[in-house]
Amino acid sequence: MAQEAKTIQCHQCKNNECLAKYPNGIPEYCQARKFLDLIEGSKRQYLEPDTERFHLAAAKVLKKGGYDWSRVQQCIEFAKELGAKKVGLAVCVGLIREGREFARFLERAGFQVVSIACMIGGLKPQETGIPDEWVNQLGISCNPIAQAEIMNREGTELNFIYGLCVGHDTIFIKRSQAPVTYVVAKDMVTGNNPGAVLLSPYHRMKFALAYGRGRTGEKG
Image (cartoon, rainbow, N blue to C red):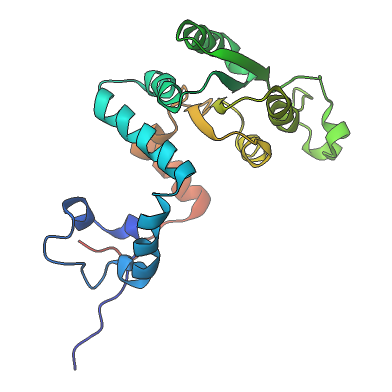
């Protein structure tokens, strides 16, 4: 009796046959087999006007810039391809100097920039419902709701995140009426290069101590 192939998650796959458009058909272990209806349906959704606009703009940026354009340049060109005139910049106060430079290049590219720093309003953590035991050592509280709502009121057409804290970025994205993309994901340990720790034996050891050791099933 033939043994049924075990379906694996994408992070467990080392063959990446999808990258070659499945030259021998979709493998038995590929989870795509479980979602063929959704994958087929997604093709039609890319043709919906609003999605098509963003998808085509992204394709143009990738085609024009290839892997030569930095993330900063890709963001500026993406906004240009969308035909946006007014853009929002949700920036962390800790990265305000770099954010200022980004805003300058946005303005030079012809955009009106609405920049809102995370600390706007100077809220105390207790005002936002944070118990005293969870107040950070600086005693400050970010305000991603105000950042998003101000941009909503100002009528921004595309919003950029520049280094908001984990979780605060989530709140901002949920509240933003305009579509959102990242310029910088803040990481105070790695100089804003979050993926670096996954290639660092020292940090991988720390993760193993924190979250446990052991291997999950992998293919290939």
